Length: 204
Image (tube, rainbow, N blue to C red; front, top):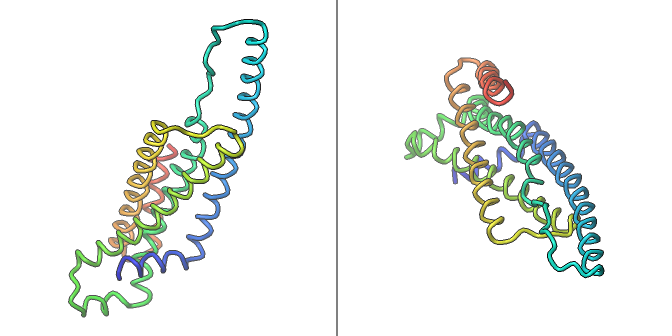
């Protein structure tokens, strides 16, 4: 119940929804541009193969194209914007409970502090996992439909590992947002501290 409450509350946040929309638009645009370029290069290679075979050439070099690196741009956006989303999730989790006064009510029930923290973390984990899964799905479908090439089993495993790392990465920034906001008397100050750390770690 606590995780479901955290998930629903996060989805209702306009600030978070705006950040999610920015991430979705930027990653989708990156995937589209990469897929269109890949399709052009793949068409050129197929034309080369057809011309070589018509000339009687039997040994043809394999295509020098790699599919997964096309998602690198989308992953970079996750690295930058996803970290902000994680921090915002942590900030909202703490500031929302402070402003609504529901934290004392929850503590009055037979719920331990660890269970409260675990419930909030699970809700954030569910939202982050949903976001990363949707990004990966858009990437795979975009490369398949627009780029005219689909990933194989090995590439799918690599993509899964990359998505798992992205979830852990964003969850770590969520924890940073929670810790900074919880320790600050003013929630906004905690958010600024967390964003300052993000600025140093991610950009600088």
